[in-house]
Length: 107
Length: 119
Image (tube, rainbow over all chains, first blue to last red; front, side, top):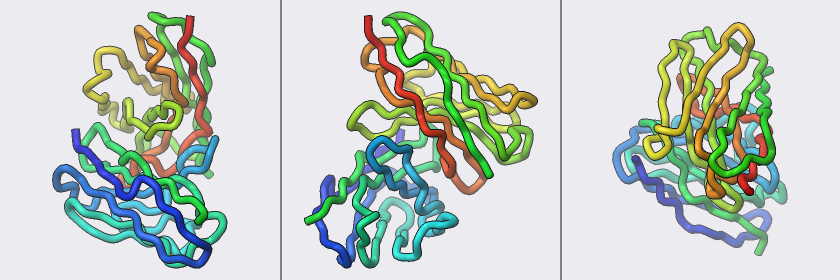
């Protein structure tokens, strides 16, 4: 199975900050990488697919980049609604696998 | 608009078989490129893929659970059923069904159903 490693595990930031979350794959996954946002008691919500494509309805302050084994989710200016847990997921080969998550909380 | 909804028991006894049904609307599992999968998420942990069935009956299972899982589609009824045998307390989790496409693996999720395994 492909292992996905996210960093950091937790991140404290303020409204208006630019934040970056990193995800590393244990082998090459090309661009088959998605990012999700999850709030307590809710299903994960797709933000980014195929490494950098913004899902319909997702604000443009979210952006994805990278390729191969190293990927980044960037939130350009944090809003109150963005405090949540974020997961990366590879879907290059089954079983598709998630990172362990990054909890973004208010500083 | 695509929607999915999971249904099934909230409590299962150890060694029993769990049967979950995903009922969906807004798409057909007969459409090329489309799939429906099952993902579970134990409390305070990351999600974990379990199984995936494609429009052409191609089926994938996570290797660690392959012997316990069966996924079946009922295209005309817009349903996908997951069976998991020999349930144990470690299988306690929220179980989600998701829509997949040629570009995504989980663009739309059901609300999830919490399944507890306890005697």
